[in-house]
Amino acid sequence: MKQRIRYLKIFGIIYVFLGLILFFGLKYQVNKNFSKESLEQLIAGRPVLMSKNIDFCKSGLLGEPKVGREYIKFVFGCQDGSKSTSTLAMNAFKDKSIVGVINEYGRILNFDGNLSESDMWDCSINGTKITSLNKNSSVLEASTVECYQFENEKK
Amino acid sequence: MIKKVFILTTLFLVVLLAFFVRKKNYAEIPIPGQSTDEYSYSWVGLSLLKTGMPVAVSGFPGYKNLEKRYLNVDHYMQVIPSDPFEINYPWMDHPPLLGLITGGYAYANGARVFGDISSLVIRKPIIVIGSLSVALAIIFSYINFGYVAALFTGLIYATAPLVVLSSRMIQAENAIIPCILACLISISLYLKNKGDKWLFISALIAGGATLFKLTGIVCYLIIIFSLFIKYKKINKLFWKDLSFFLAISLPISFLFVIYGLVYGWENFQTILFSNYNRFYGIGVNSILELVRNQRLTQHKFLPEIWVISGWFVFFASLIKTQKNIGDKLIKLAIIAYLIVYIFFGSQPYGWYTFPFWPLLIIGLGRFLSLGLTKSKNLFAVILMLLIVVGANIDRLINVFEFQKYSQFWRFGVSGIIFLFVLSELLKIKRTYIIKLLVLIIFAGAILLNIKYLGQINIDFWWGNIS
Image 1 (cartoon, chains in turn red, orange):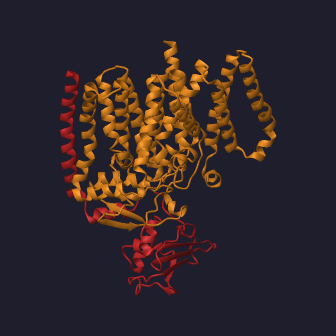
Image 2 (tube, each protein chain N blue to C red):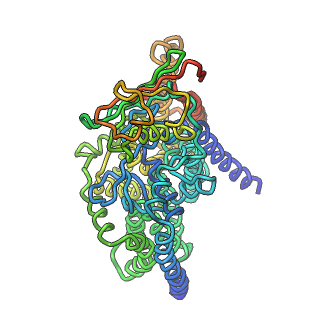
């Protein structure tokens, strides 16, 4: 019985200490480090440990989202004839501008940098060439972004 | 002294074997992304360490903060059709201890964003935990049943293909398993009058188990059942032990509530009740499913003859009363987890059933070892081993490929059974020959396990595992 009381005393002291650290330590950590920006960085930040994507024509994303017409389709074609198609749900894109969705697609495939700024691709949306004039306009539902490798580009 | 060194060395080699078979292709099989829980758990740990806020994927309604995003970790979306993740915070689906281990390991290795949480990194701690479970199963068997049972249990649990593949997955059950086994070890030592410290240790572990997932409460049940074994009735001594146990374990489990309070009681309570109202996916067919179908994920079945044999032994143990404390504990531990499994319901997926497997295999190891050491139920032992070997050969080669070896099987197996029955009927003692046969068949079954594991790569996975 004496031994049990000794165990309980030691346990009690460590427990109170741990409980306080857990509660106040976490509160402090959340107040100090959590924000919308840190959350966005955590979720959508560029991974450093994952291999970079170098071949968009062979990197299609699988799956057909069940979202009616609330989707966007990406088609990437290369000089060697290879082609990939991905269909993604629009509600998973925060920035719904043309340049925003292209960059987000690049992020998902872990492209190194902003995909919209890459000079490898000639892109159009719903058949209209993407230029500096329309790149900030919003993407309409059921849109298709098509990008083809420039003729002088090699993968 | 030499005997002790031999015992320790062989059992240690079994644990090493367990580690190496788990490590081979660990980042590729099971295919990353087939259970996105693996990422989700680790994201909890990473987000807690980076921002203090648990952020991960949940299927529960009731969360106020929701972000839908595509995250192509391990490039898995290029292999498996996927929807966007529904990311919630503060994530309270489960306590965060497993996430802190895997996410913490990833953080220590340079991971800073969700995309960094790759299987190559996060599965490393879990295969160490899986190997630890093998060591604990061996220790429990050794303490309660002796060396041969420990060796048999260790070899089966180290190499059974389904167990090996499952123990690479980041699922809370894989962390609860060593807790169950450690609880069984400490409580069996307590029951053998080795002192109060073992009840204290079992209380620490039982409390800790619930910080992985609430189903860790199975450890509480195991200890309570064990105290019934000790006192056989509810008397003063029982209450003394129980209150000492609860005075340690309950406050540890309560740490989850303290953690939840940091992010608001309302959120914690809502998610806890969402947990309670989960879809009862195991259905009324759950016990048959348990015995008949073993799964790794929702859609990946891998029937495991060692587990099925373990169920046979368990059912047989229900018919007969055991005297050995270890036998009683294993039986009650399986029943305790069955209670938890049926109560929590959820899904019949692989990981909900993982905790049955070490317990069933310990029972099976014990059963086989009794055949070898005490000639108990030798015919049943041989028949069971033949079933295992047959099933193991069947998953290695198909029936057409098998035809060239069929003569061996035809004459060998029917001959063994015929001669065995004959020697029994004519009371001819051939115990040593039969025991040698048991050893040979058992060794063959283990080698077939390892051979099968060696075959499993990505192509084999997609082509052969339904």
